[in-house]
Length: 113
Length: 117
Image 1: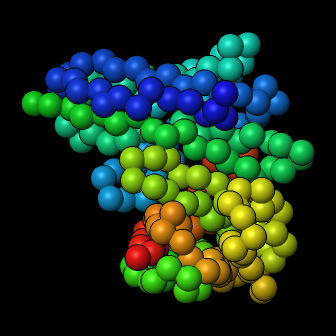
Image 2: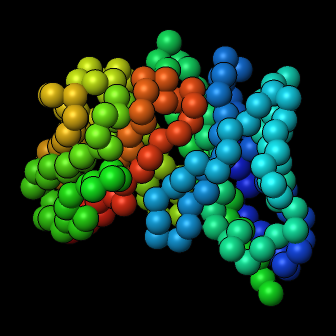
């Protein structure tokens, strides 16, 4: 089983649509979870952290299910500018190493007019 | 500059040559990370440093790859005897604190694209 798995997409949706991305992770000891956004030919940038209680930032909602080792990202009212690749990121916390941030392969989103 | 700076931005080399990729993190950032990203894939963890100490190098593919950060600032990733499969975008990132992985806030550079012929 891969450490962090995502549906690669692409997700092609019309403007205004709601779209959800899912991610699973292998290490039950993982403590920290994040979503990054990467635009074409650009570097990844932190979108939001994911908390156990779930968290929302405008049109974006992130959820964590520790029992199922599952993370989700929901985007409401999609905009053209949301088109990008969304990367699920997990701190694997192997052997006490705090810095082992593992990225998924990313899910590509394309929002069409 | 204010961001993470990497050089060279593009490097084309022949198989068997050694290459050195440089990363200049954001001033004052404690942690520095190296990732490798193939086209259409997410960044693949290679190694990271807190100050000058290499904390985890479990992601380095083999002993041809090494990294250093001797003064706790600039870092160099060296690939010896390059092979075609080493071709990728090599990305450096830094974070303000040693707990960067807990906050998740890594600041990435624009990357060094390596092509091995």
